[in-house]
Length: 171
Image (tube, rainbow, N blue to C red; front, side, top):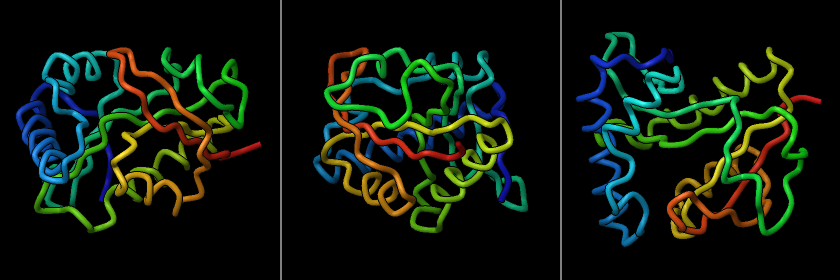
């Protein structure tokens, strides 16, 4: 597998993967991504900002999508709890990680995290932060297995509360 920046040509497949993820969350009675987010405008913005990525197999088929940034996350400035690394220091953040339904449970999400962990180490950036819905046990299980620590609760820009996690990558 490999990861590359997404392009506008990838948008239809990215949206298909996101719709699959929305349907999965809905089937699990998880009220995440059920109110029009993420949407095409958000993905287009991620692409413009060079923060949208796709995961490809050897045949260059898009398996998954994610947003990754080292430009901070405004909603992380206020947390009911404490981050491991001070919020004023540079960190990585992953959002909108979704795998095509036909590729779930094949280690792609872990591959994404490990890829960006390696990037952060190379850049001497100390941590990666992520948030997820309180009912999203799959993502919570993954981040805990990867060594992330629960830090508290943040509030999204659209008013929902999310569980916040962080992993120290490099010191």
